[in-house]
Length: 163
Image 1 (cartoon, rainbow, N blue to C red):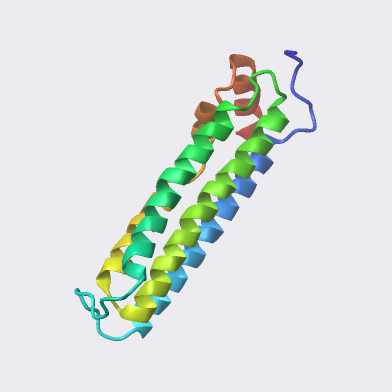
Image 2: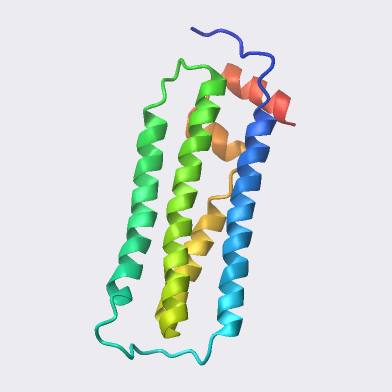
């Protein structure tokens, strides 16, 4: 099944779409975070309310988003058949990347919400770390080639059509 890649396939479209979606998620999260930070009152370093559920929820969701997203990502990528067409591999990569991004985005939003409710820097720090990790996950051509474990023929074709 080492058929040549379909000529209508444009890997650049996948990379552009994924990069654009990633950028929108990061920028949206950053803008909301900045807005909330600038419009909230005084930042506190302690926990005013002892029964605050967010003390447990925000770190737990952050850890689940980080480790769960990585687990889902790696499991999904290893389940891709090496003999699958490149278009199918790229489509699966797009799907699993968006799931990973969404998990981190959701946990970061929970941190922003908790910060809005309590003005505790603890939630802001967790949110910033989640956002930094999300930025680190920015999709690139080299990352996609490495993560999908493309064979040499697919790499050559991918590199020639993306540049």
